[in-house]
Amino acid sequence: MSSLGIAILQIGGIFTGLINVYIWVFIINALLSFVNPDPYNPVVQFLRRITQPAYTLVRRFMRTDFNGLDLAPLVIIIGLQVITVLLSYLFSVVASIL
Image (tube, rainbow, N blue to C red; front, top):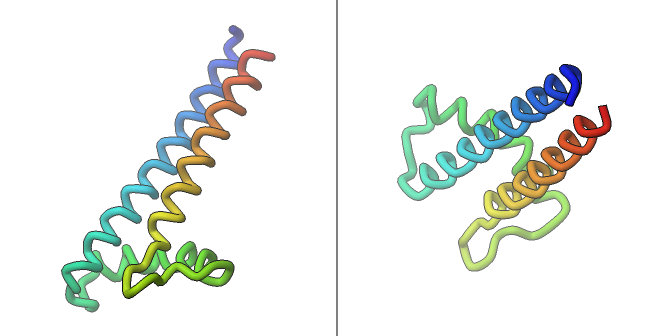
């Protein structure tokens, strides 16, 4: 494998790592929603600002509220996991060609 292939694999690792961090942000935000934290807390505001665009996108296309339980975080996490697998495969194929 050439040095360009290794660089592409490393870039793919960075992308998958960022997606995994974003998944953990959704998990933390979902767990915090059970506790009903102070909305003026800067950490809570940051988490809401980071996750709200994805929640809005998912809720626009499908109903995620079932009997008071919001399943939007689950849908988003599954979607991000699928994207992680596809990106890993794509970067490994491109790296093996180069």
